[in-house]
Length: 419
Ligand code: 9WN
Image 1 (cartoon, rainbow, N blue to C red):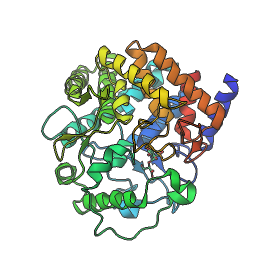
Image 2: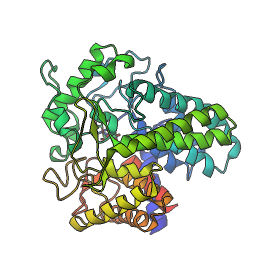
Image 3: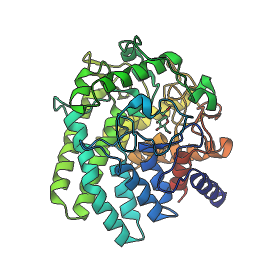
């Protein structure tokens, strides 16, 4: 059974392999996505190490001069996705979007490096990637934390990777829709519209894109100009974890300066993260920087925070919180609390389970010594695959496969769990 599942996962990854990058899935997402690639590289590393390095190299080949690594790279023309390069208008030689995505690459590169069987190749590739990843981390704190709080804000829901989370609902009320150019969505012709964001949310996504475009994609201006500035604990946890991992990688490669700077960013972030803890919910919550208020929304963002080296007592509380969530669903970990009124079992990031998020939560809990919950989450991932195949996301009550199928990072996570 195990080997069969690994073989199926490899076949999914090969199918979506475009040579030097992978698409998340055929049709729905025909380009390269940032955090998809970094997480998918972990899967490749188990059966094709050079290919794993290439995936991340391709991503960083499109890093902007200011250090940002864009969330989409439009390698080829494809009318099947909206918004395409013309809407973004970033004027890059190979078009890209103008926003970023969770900084998983630092974590992934350290892990691939440490597991590598071809050490010569690993040293060469990691040495070349190290300053680039570090520049991206520095970009985050310089541009998305202008007051030096230690935590960064996202300025568009797509940056979080959790596009239509309940976390953004209240803040989205303040994002206007006037002046949005008429558009036709493509996602709803590939996937069930009932499992996707609403048209109203799409208008607000596009309003933000048009706003940033009107500012020439100048990152020194975008944060302060955005009506949407949210400090997401999950997003910050990924960045903090990657900074901490990059410090260890830099030490291994003898770069003491990058090691020290990375460690300092991680430590400052961890200390600041505690301000997001909610005793009432037993998890972290988002903070809406534009109105200086906590966001009372018990989503998976505050559970994913366990991916960072948070205090052990917090990790234990998060394991307890997940256990409590399991009373209201059949599979872990739902992207929103099933007992909350906004929970929507099959609608994207408002309830469904995502294997990549499960993987990161499980990894963080394991490091914190919460192995029972970590193993339970991994076991649930495999139950979902057995029942519903390699889907984009799954219903936490009935294990329904949702969104796109034959999904690259879902397959990569299965290889990670089973190898
Ligand atoms: C927008 C590719 C991406 C993921 C995101 C997921 C979804 C895109 C979309 O697909 O977002 O970036 O068009 O819906 O929410 O996490 O990286 O798999």
